[in-house]
Image (cartoon, rainbow, N blue to C red; front, side):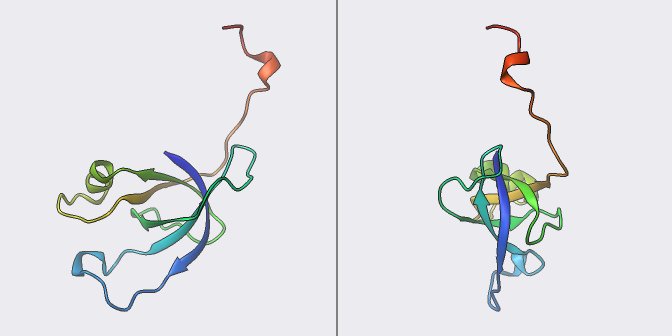
Amino acid sequence: MILSKVTGTIVATQKKEQFKDKKILICQPITLEGKPLGRDLLALDGGVNAGVGDTVLVVQEGGAAAQVLKQTDVPVHSVVVAVVDGYDLVPEETLPPT
């Protein structure tokens, strides 16, 4: 999964019938510190109702996308599967030695 920030939406007046009720989101991958990481990607909202400004988890694999969308014949590679409410990072010096 890829931690990302939703930075925009795509409007498509013509799309496959199975995608009529799905939003296409522009997602910027981010580091755990919230800094941009790499290039933007387009992801279909997998039913989590994400919007601009939300931190999300994106799955980027066709088989997983098909499972989330409950359709096996979808031409989709990236799907937003969760809106992240928050996360905690443990300071490295408090982790047990490996």
